[in-house]
Length: 261
Image 1 (cartoon, rainbow, N blue to C red):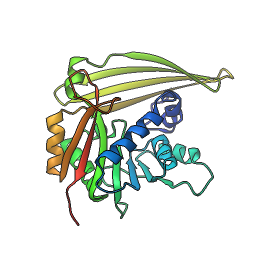
Image 2 (cartoon, helix red, strand yellow):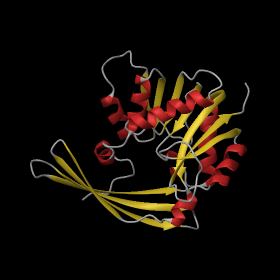
Image 3 (cartoon, helix red, strand yellow):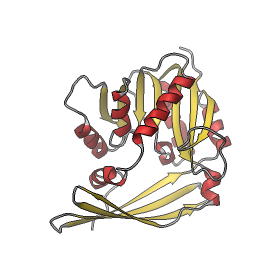
């Protein structure tokens, strides 16, 4: 058994098996509706910050957007590149980079941080640094779409130990998630234990520990204001509309870049 770093080669290889049934198409449709609803101009270019293995980026490129996918895990980016069709006309590129320090030297009409990417910014200064990265990559009045764990819901319905089994291409992946909540630091450390069983009876066991932060709505609003954003919308996921309550674990936010260049 090995204990690799977070977002290791093994985790990247397992990622698309674990999330094979996630409704990526529906999520991208919601992104597009949101961009059309709140964009002051037609959205053409998107930065997908924390793109993982690139599924959202690829689907959005198929919808006609020019997409740049960035992730801090080189293993995730490698996986994303293997999923890109050989058709060079598809307007999507992938590269490695960190949300706290990224500087691509260009700006976009919209920036996405989907699937709780912002939750990995644990310290207050990390959150500010990530938001500053978003801001320097946004055009004036550009949109920032992101989602986070909702603090009131996390404290009401605390994370529980879970075991799930996934099967794909003759492989079976058994995943045990063991969470440990720290309500003082607003964090949850989750130990993921993966047992991958191969058709030839070989197996691989890996362990990763992910520490994520949860946020409260007024806290998010304050962070956005401090870094030059206007909060435009807040809604529960997966609905993407309606009022947020303490029963909603995942909340999406839409913010607008107030800076005029």
